[in-house]
Length: 138
Ligand code: THU
Image (cartoon, rainbow, N blue to C red; front, side, top):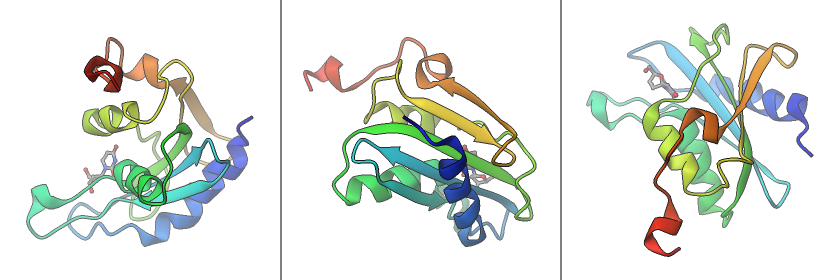
């Protein structure tokens, strides 16, 4: 059972850690794993622009580095100047990274502006006909 408010609040709480001095577009994400634990991440930009990384991927890497291998849901908040004003949909690369650690039909993606103002969809809706670990026998 996903506690939407709790997951969105975790993303909102870590938003101040977003490092986006170049775009001023701050993003934060919180992933709920099968263990029941929540891991957060933020976008981390770089003076060499392509070296920057999205919030979703730092959150997923955070979870994986702590030993998690199954993600049930992710909440994403984003907007200019630390204001979570947008429904910040995950980029294509982040959708593919999510695909590694979930069942796309079960994985819930929440894009939120506040704990009560959000949209939710499955990863299958965001990334149909996807390539995943089972294609390589995993
Ligand atoms: N960004 C994310 O963190 N997640 C997304 O899904 C979209 C974009 C970040 C990357 C960059 O630091 C800033 O937003 C502007 O593209």
